[in-house]
Length: 409
Image (cartoon, rainbow, N blue to C red):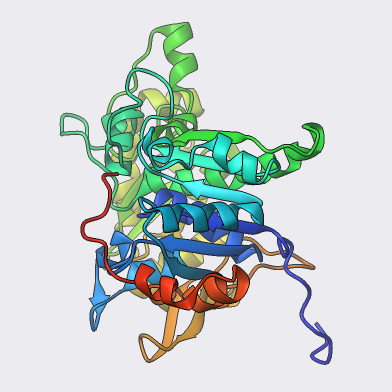
């Protein structure tokens, strides 16, 4: 880009999102929209704000993960249980394209903020509703978070070693996948206004649903063959080899031979030609039957090499391999740097630069960007509530005051 030219307008510039959600899944959906230029106003409860500010690690009392998930957003504080909070939300809804919420079904209705009230203020509004089990069905009333969804969707059942207990993931997998799907569905619904006479609609997304969709061929395998996938460590039921292996210098690599040509290149890189002729490993179906024996042979071959040597051998053979990185290795990795997968922004609350994951995906003309980290609680109250909506400054100051414990999720 010519440095004398202004940066291109972000692709979602002009899209306005009102994020009245909290915690992880729904705020992440809003984050993805904000990354590409949507103006996202995050509504937090007065006082402590979103409870995610208290999640995980902190620096000088400032929650670090909040800074990531709520980047590129503006923060205002409102108690949605009060007439002032309800009226302010309805006024903001009039000028919004999307409202995102993740309260238990029935909560918005109780507050007088159900979709009919929002749509009366703005008929073109899209309401993205994220909840544990959705707005309908016998489990809709239950409280639900990502951890429960990871079990309910079937992920935990297949995750772990054979004979061992089901394992939950080491990060918010269900919440994160819901965030991705929520952003996608919000954009689909915005496009859908063209086919719906300019009218908006409700998008009802349960946290377990996206993860369930991504869990592979389990439904069709059960339907057609009566199969129930079991825990089998890092192996997959449809391709072999697929596992992690320890190198001579106590590092780890991940290998997958999903194509026959790739499998043969792996054997060439490891200099084990006798395995090429072994009928147990002749094709993928044979390897699936003998996956444990194949893992033993590959581990014996891989532990002859240090990681750097192994990576050079695989590169020379054009074989598929990746190191099992920890975050320290990722921070030092030349490819991550070249792809700018980690970005840095200045943050006044933390008193300096803050690094975080960058926007995913490379646009050739209108790329997204992390412009600022998650804001202070109510940092934009004056800008949004007073300057934009014209609300009384004293009423806004009163709205800043903590209102006791937050509503049940």
